[in-house]
Length: 290
Ligand SMILES: NC(=O)c1ccc[n+]([C@@H]2O[C@H](COP(=O)([O-])OP(=O)(O)OC[C@H]3O[C@@H](n4cnc5c(N)ncnc54)[C@H](OP(=O)(O)O)[C@@H]3O)[C@@H](O)[C@H]2O)c1
Image 1 (cartoon, rainbow, N blue to C red):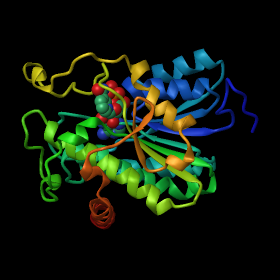
Image 2: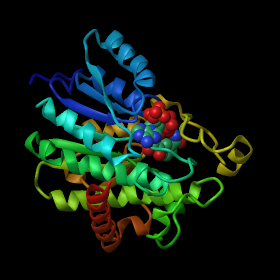
Image 3: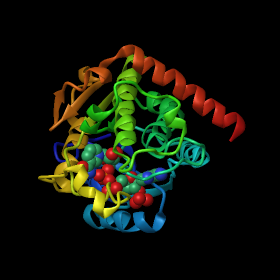
């Protein structure tokens, strides 16, 4: 593996979820430009193809490929992981980026849509890829959370995450899913110890992407979105965590490419352990009955 200052990721393999648009698209492109080979784990090949073509054009090499992944369906997650593992490739960077806000309903496996896709889907995907990441160490797992985690209710309602979205804008459910992202990343770091894998959660900024597309237009002013960053700016903290953040900062939360203190609840070890235990039980249960 020969890396250079302009190609620090030469010879590295990355997998980015939700790379068809927005922050994930820029993340995948920049990782490829820094030398990585990038798997774009996305639900639509038609929406991902232009990103693959763009990366090929910019890098002058076949630096990206599509992996089918629908995080609202654990069968798809298992198939995606199996397909990646069957390539026999190492995995140095897992970027848990995909996310939705304001989409209502249940995942195929019966979880509230935001919680199921943003948290539980990534929980399972990470678990399925963990042994390969360990075998490829040093490796990193970057989870795109949000400062919206601060808006989560004081207590996670474990029954509500297994029922259809209730709030009008979906913001409450989104906030819970993003709190789960921060707790997950911290608990993962504790569990990984000195395995050579470091984990980071982050807030990308408030970014002009399609993330709020499911919120009906008349309700969007309620979201109070101002001073939006470009997707290029929005990908900077992810890229910092993927390439430059020190391994000693594993488990921490970043914003504007710097370690930041998340909400108190996001630092609650017992809550993180409980979320982990419940998530393990849920995915095992789906495995048995799904
Ligand atoms: N934009 C912001 O202001 C902001 C702020 C804080 C945090 N974030 C977080 O940043 C991350 C990226 O969001 P973005 O702003 O770039 O939004 P975006 O433009 O809507 O992109 C979201 C990506 O997630 C994918 N996705 C959605 N549901 C999926 C599913 N069931 N299975 C697989 N992929 C799925 C989308 O795929 P399709 O193309 O198939 O729809 C798309 O590629 C999210 O985790 C979001 O919560 C964003």
